[in-house]
Length: 261
Image (cartoon, rainbow, N blue to C red; front, side, top):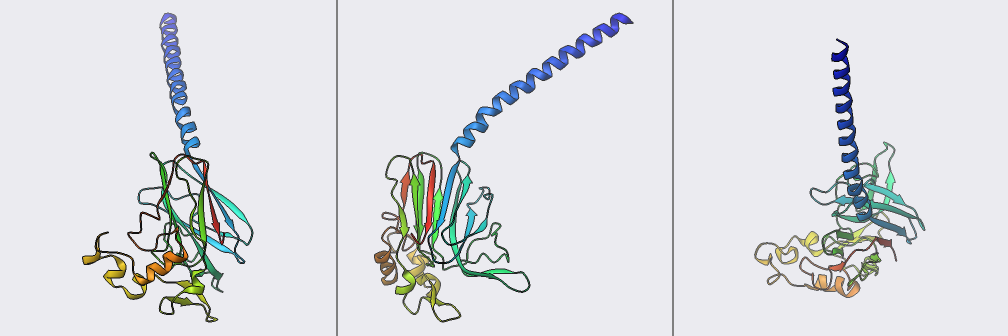
C-alpha cells in the first residue's frame, strides 16, 4: 500500500511538472505576440484650435473593433489621444454646436451620431461633416480627409515619423463662408454651420456617382466639387477624386489630427 502511495505521488509530481512546463511555454509564446501587437498600435493625437468645443466622433470599419472612446469632448485649446490596434481602419469627425436638453439627451447641429449620448457607440455622423478616413497596416497606411459627405469644419491629419510620401492631408479653409446658398445648413441664428455635398442636396446620380455615373470614367468633377477642391486641394471633393486626395505613409508611430489648424 505504501509503495502504491509513493507511485501515485510520483505520477502526480510528473503530471504537475508537465502542466507547469506547458503553462510556462504558453506564456512565453504569448508574450512576444502581445509585445508585437503593442508595438504595432498607432496613437492618434487630437487637438482643438477652434474657438469653441469640438466633440470628436469615432467609427471603426467593418469587422474592426471600436476604439476605447467612440466620442468625447475636446474643449478649446485642449488635446487628447486614442490608440488603435494594428490593421485598424475607420473614421473620425468633429461634431459642433452640441448641447444636452432638459431630458438629458445629447445632440449636435452638425455631425450628430443620433445616440443621444456623447459616445457614438458604432454609429456614424450625420452629413454634412468633414471626415478623416484611415486604414492602418500592410506595406503602407492610407489616409485622407473627405468632403464627399459635405463639410462642417476645418481639419488636418499628419503622420508622425514613417517613411515615404507622408504628407499632411486636410481642409484648412472655411467652406461655410463660401458655401452656395443651395448647399448651406443654417443654425438657429441664421449663420451657416455646415455645407452639404451636391449629392446630399440634390440626390442626382451625376453628383452622387451612381447609376450610369457609377465609375471613374463616367463620374467627373462638377461645379460644386470644383468649388470644394479649389478651397481644399488636399481633400476629397467627390467620390473618384483619388489621385490628389489619398495619401500613404509607411510605419508612422502616430498621427496628429487638428481641428481648425
